Image (tube, rainbow, N blue to C red; front, side, top):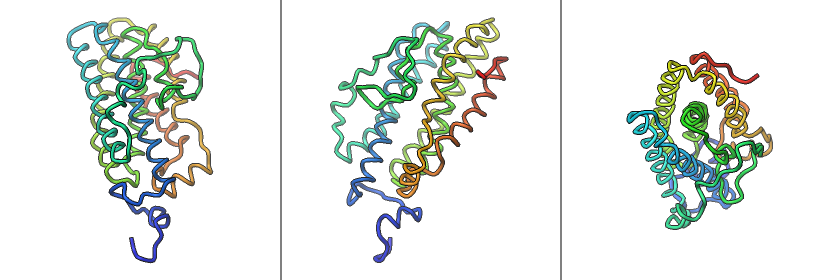
Length: 253
């Protein structure tokens, strides 16, 4: 950054920050919100999959589910350590929120967040059995991949680097989900799989949120966003739709 360039102009021009020193208050607030949403969603997601491990139909499936729980928890820890550099109480974080808490299966909260934490709304719904878990992971992993591609470009360099290291591991979770779904389809679970697609598709879709142009322009000027929510959602519709059709299923109309 040159002596004559303001920090706002530096960020708007694509500049990056590398430590918490002299980070503007609004930038810090938005960065913390982004990190908290990711950490809380990973911890809540891991808690949900932990409850389903022993419902796996075989050892290989249970190992895959356990691996997802381990790696999602590790991803939360990686980003939580960065939050700690901004003053977050990392010692209390893992136990302070009820990560296993879920709503009724038929609840409809749209994009509303939990009263306890910043998890995406989709992680407030309970998983109902192994087939349901596989389909939820299939759809949500593809949403996470779109979001991580976006977050890997944030202007806070340590966080961008963390997201870039996390992205291929989360992509592998999607590969594990597809592998499990193919196996379920071959065993004649297509009706239950379609029911799960019908249930989870709208709930994953709403996790992208809508486009607030004024807010998007603010985040873009801070280097914290580059693509709007609707653009990310449309890309997810294409990738998730391809995966669903590959299984002989249909995305909801």
